[in-house]
Image (cartoon, rainbow, N blue to C red):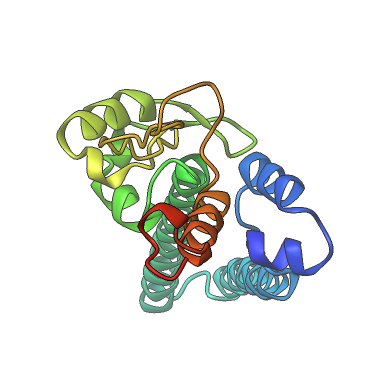
Length: 198
């Protein structure tokens, strides 16, 4: 769930920003359930295979060829379990890195790809224990354009500032009043000194 979704649900922009800063962008429940169900199904399959192999091993005692095949399957099963655990750890590590980078960088996927995962340690709860801050500092020094500026700076536009009272004096100039005064003076009859009629 993104900040825009939270605002659409009725949260103010300030509250939506606070939620995203605290918890990061959220995964929809349907997607979480889908991945969680797939994980549970795979774990169940591994347990079932282990049980089947054990049953076969008991039945195959005395048959060397079948025992060798069972041993081969057990080794393959152990390797599959190891690969699965490694892949799961990699996903947990990637997720923890992306959550830690949220609101710090412009593109979390790009920066997460630049981080050396082998140097990062995770806590039991899946949060980052250490190893990320040093890498981010190095990246910030070399590729600062990837990071969101810490303070929003307003552009400093330099130029001439119009005077508040260009006519001088203590009263500010009222352009409308000056224009009306000028038109009124034009509309007056000429003075009688230079008037030939009168």
